[in-house]
Image 1 (cartoon, helix red, strand yellow):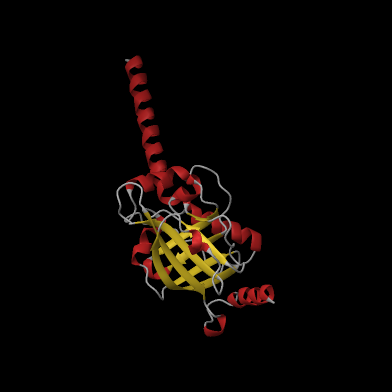
Image 2 (cartoon, one colour; image 1 turned 45 degrees about the horizontal axis):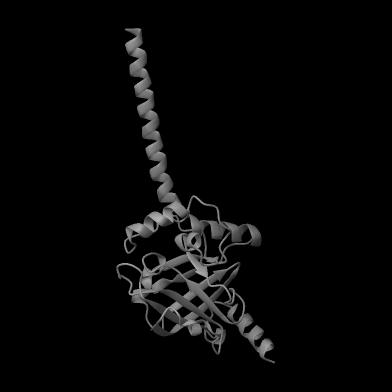
Length: 234
C-alpha cells in the first residue's frame, strides 16, 4: 500500500510540475512578445536617466495577425538569443507599425526586428537612413502605407519625424534608393509582393523626408539635424 501511495504521489507531483511549466511558458510568451521594444526603452531609460519621450513600455502583446507562421516562430526563437540594444524604435501610427531598429541586417536581427542597412546614416545623423524588415513580419503593414503618412524614429531621448513622400517598387539590385536625398530622410525596404509564395522577386521602397521643425512642435530635435546638414554643406 505504501509503495502504491508513493507512486501516486510521485505522478501527482510530476503532473503539477508539468502544469506549472506550461503556465510559465505561456506567460513568458505573452511577455516576451514585446521584449525587443521593452529592452530598447529600458536601455534608454538607464542611459539617459530621464523620463522617456515615448512614455512607459506598452505591456500589450504584439499583434501577429498579419504575420506568417514561419515569421512568428522565427521571431519567438530569436528572443532567446542575446543581441545588442536597438539603435531606435520606428513607428508608423496610422498603420500600427512599431518595431525596434537594430544595427545590421543579418538573419538574427531581421527575425528580431528591423535593421539599419550598412553604409546608410544612423538615427540623428544627416543623410538617408536605410531600414529593412521582413514583408511577412514587422513590415507587412507597409502594404497599407500612403504618401503623407508620418514616421517617427525614437533614438535615445530624441524623436525625429518624417513624412512619406514617395513609394516605389524596384529590382533587388537597385541600390540607388539608398542614396542621400535633398534633406535627411528614412528609406524603408522590404520584399515584394507582400504575399508572394517563396522568395519575393522585387523590393518595396518607402521614402520619407524629415519634417520641417518650424512647421511642427512634435519634435524639437529635427532642427538640430537640419542645422548639422547646413554645416556639412558649407
